Length: 274
Ligand code: PAF
Image (cartoon, rainbow, N blue to C red; front, side):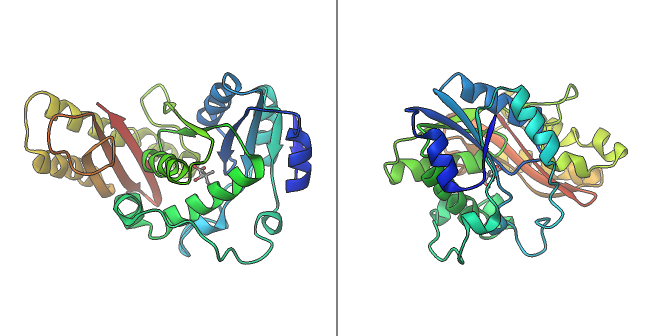
């Protein structure tokens, strides 16, 4: 695997390729990221990953400074997965001056759910992804479905700006008990790690309840919140939304149950399409 630290090095390495397939990450890689890299390998003529912990998408009280930087293990995993090029710019390469031009995704998509609890998060994400796309110039980019709203916002951004990039969603990788793999699982104590699966279980129960005929979505969502609260979590939201735009459902249509909740001091998110 070749490593580019600058945009010029990256462009030199990719100059000969026509269909770069790209997986952007913030590092601290796990099997979920590697599954996205494997997916990317089947789609392009060169596989590119990036590692960049993007300050713009962290709120002041969030974990930017302590976000795990696991360079050696990340490189070993990407090399083993057959990633061809890793773009790992220093902060002053990607943001040599304050990033005053920003991408503001529409409020109806970006200020709900994650965006409501993490104001400005999707401005930070969209801005860095736009910039990474400008650097890598991929034809394909793979994003995990675990960050469901992020995937939807990036897909819309690419569509609205007519960017020639296919956005592909990668299925969520799960531990054998059903816990969605996440870089932030590393913050959990052994006891919390055992408990953490209850977020996905509560989402499953919500989906199953709706499917078995109970049409009272508000009470199903309240039940999802209660289940987690009673187990000691602090849930931010447990909701059922339509897959197309994450708005409340109006009729029979493809749905997704999405949730975010804090266990101890670790905030986890998950979702389930049904
Ligand atoms: O999902 C992530 O890891 C980040 O939000 C991304 C897409 C790499 C942008 O920093």
